[in-house]
Length: 346
Image (tube, rainbow, N blue to C red; front, side):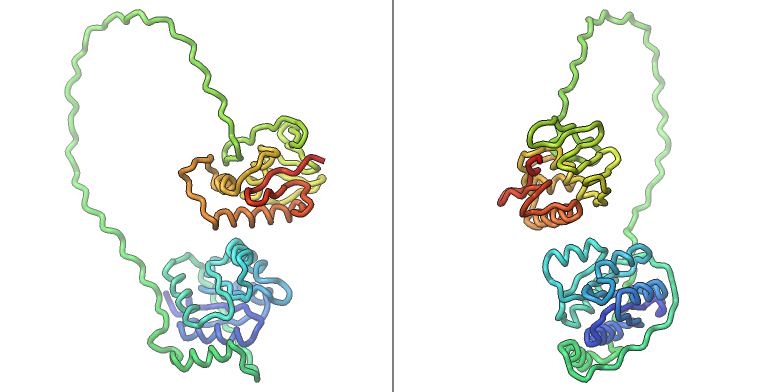
């Protein structure tokens, strides 16, 4: 990789943290471009096509999650969130927005360098775009934790020293043994046998029709079975399933609430369709994990606590989009310690 390709964009509104990240990446051999807010950062990535981009979450104007989604529309830059938000829901949201790594403040400078080197060992295609780097801001008068860490890091590792990161060499191609060409084998001559009269076949019994398979949850590629109308359950209406003002069409994958269209992800749509297909029957989190994977319920599949937490995150996002309240549910009801089911019909 040429030196012109080693460009990093730093999107950070805190000048102390921005200077620290600038120092770490500069000593790793990068030419840095600094941005103070989300809109300026998007423009910098578009103009310079950086190899690595660092991104804060809490910034004036556009927050980091929205910036990451905007960047993923046109850039394959390696994206590292560096933020003070360390809750699990924030980390999950960051990765769903397109992050390659997530680092919580206050961070250790050598850990940032190690994470950047680790990502560079996973090559990613990029288009070359040139541009000039922005000048770093003046250092603040009061020394913060980031300024102190930058000073200690600079004392231990001189700028442009022997520890500067170098481009990762491509892995050698796997050895392929030579294939020996085998001479074509001539088939033996076939002797014709005299035709024999076919034996009288007994009358064939009509084949039995296989039993109708029942799907207990929505499976990609399989239609959601119609739900019989009744108290406490959704009412089918042709290709639509309607429940308490919510309507879902599994064929067109359209969801509306009180006539207004709702934009859901593939996972959120599958979870909603699966819950509608089982009515008031309680669905465990492990069962819904398999629904997200597109698998039938088989005990050999492994479901851990992180998988169950991801179900909670997706259900929380689904409730927010369809306007549901977990304390007074209209669509999805939480069964504590077990999982979820449809709320009662209004």
